[in-house]
Length: 426
Ligand code: ADP
Image 1 (spheres, protein in one colour):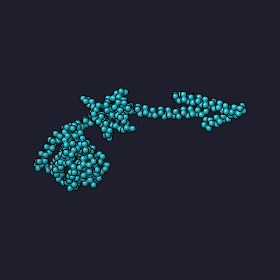
Image 2 (image 1 turned 120 degrees about the vertical axis):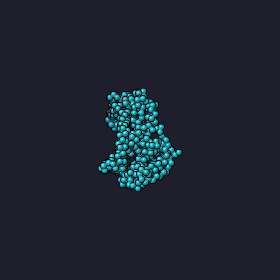
Image 3 (image 1 turned 90 degrees about the horizontal axis):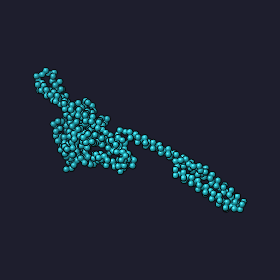
Image 4 (image 1 turned 30 degrees about the vertical axis):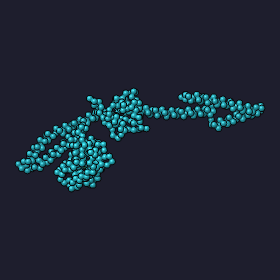
């Protein structure tokens, strides 16, 4: 019933009361009596609504007129809300169930760093206990300094890999993302098996390279003896011997690079770190190259005397690779400019050539082992395809980054950036 219909009904009631009151000589009393009756009736209906609202789960009581209409509407709204709520709850449960069944550990952390929820896998991977640890501060429970430093630093651009478990080490990989109002979602995975396989791979490469060196040294030795006595051998052997010797030399370089790469990949280098004067190191490489690349022109521009905390041999090898590439992949006499400067809290080495350049499609893959732009250009220059992989690994161990910019037939610029924290003025 609409409010106008209800008002019309009251008006009719009052008119009838007034008419009868007037006929019997009590118009005022009749109107007052009807009004009082109406108030009592409305109070009674209100009481019905009020008591129903205290437990709105049950069906609404019968009510008259506007009140009945009102109750029906409230009830229908409520049913709609309940349906939406159930749907939402079902979605939340579904999401929680799927997170719960994941093999990766999942932890939800609030903005204060307290645990809100975690799944079964997280219990195992982070040694959490359910339900005691819910609402506890995560960093109080996970006692790995590396994990805690990563979590508190709040910079999750790169995932964290850490080792735990003392005698029987286990490897974990952690990724964190922000969501909602400062909450964090943490994924943790056991990567022990892939670390073990990766170690097997590097060990295998290192062992094979090592084992191949001895027979190769013997072959190279005999080849040099034969070459030294070329005159005593049939003439047709000369070319073959020279080619064999060249290939043996290539193989030696390849094995040397492979061994070096696996050493860089596996070594714990913290204790061998020292402050390295990058300017002098570049000067030294330039001198060494004078003999190795007589046609190469290297211009050194040293604008800072900052030093970098690191491993001398590794940095020497990384910059040598960049510089030798720049010379190898440029025409004779074309200058290579090496600049050492600092800018915006970074120390930068820039190796710039005006050589053959690299097509943009190859750039993202250049630092992969054995990746070459084309075999012909590398075999002409005696490359192994390992140079930039070595550079990448050395820089990763020095918190450095490598950026490659290049244009075909114009030249390339290889930029190495070290963070300020890893360098010093003194
Ligand atoms: P390589 O031993 O073949 O030089 P690298 O890993 O050092 O192996 O380099 C990978 C490839 O990147 C090379 O084969 C070469 O094609 C390309 N490259 C590297 N540096 C340069 C450069 N300065 N100019 C042009 N091409 C380059």
